[in-house]
Image (tube, rainbow, N blue to C red; front, side, top):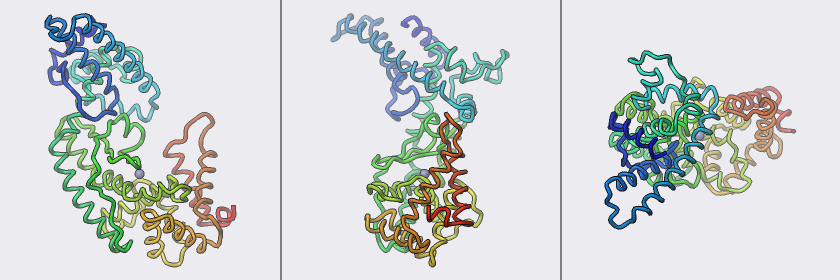
Length: 393
Ligand SMILES: [Zn+2]
């Protein structure tokens, strides 16, 4: 492995942009292959110390042992990376190909026939990374990837754009709360950090960003462009839609922390989040066309509210249910039940969605976003045309 590592170091000399052997990564921690790259950097530093014969405070043997341990760690991590890559589905493979063609080191692109000046036949990324690439070659690609994400994470352009967006969001959200929820303060969005999301952890899992309740951060997808500037612009372009949506998740998460809350289901959570996000982005003027993300979920939410006599009042109650106390949740549930003339209507709708999902998911496969959306549309159709099928189930 040590000889192999020197081979990698030769590449490093060719392309200093990507391969500074003691290049350190401080963030983010969840980038694919992050620990392998960090460990390899450490190992390179140890090897450098050993070849310099300057083990001042540490004995040579201790250095050698620590170097071997680091090599083992890198190999274990690379094996896991290969497994992750091997499990990538066809749709995500397209995303991976487009991305690596912009982020991978030049000498690798050339070697795989993927750069404009290469003459050899083109090698596919997934097969090569999973089985054919040597540990050092795979490590080189991961170094390039981690470098790109690191650059995005420390970009001043992004930091400034984030400040502006946060400020605007908080102002609008405050207005929304005052008008619609009678003065409940928005949770402190200022405390939320922005994490640039690894494309392997975002787009390739069919998400442009995410927020986990309880974690003080929102994650948005990194840009997939060919230069730092273009990537920055692409990340910023996502702020209005993706970051607003994730900020709203943070605002609305209180209902999800209430045990047994009927609001803590994915279809309704996403529908309400995107509906509120649209309100914040376009004030009172929702674009009429039902387009964009979570369209099916928003349609079902609308159908559920249309069973009630006063939609504006129901909207207020629902927003309050999502952000307020458990009692606010109960008030909304009772409001919906009264309108549809049945008990536990929200739960019944959610059960119907879960049932349709199992019907639509092929045996031995996982459900995906398309299946979820199709199930929601089916339930929406029933609620509109034959609501008894749902409400009396
Ligand atoms: Zn969401």
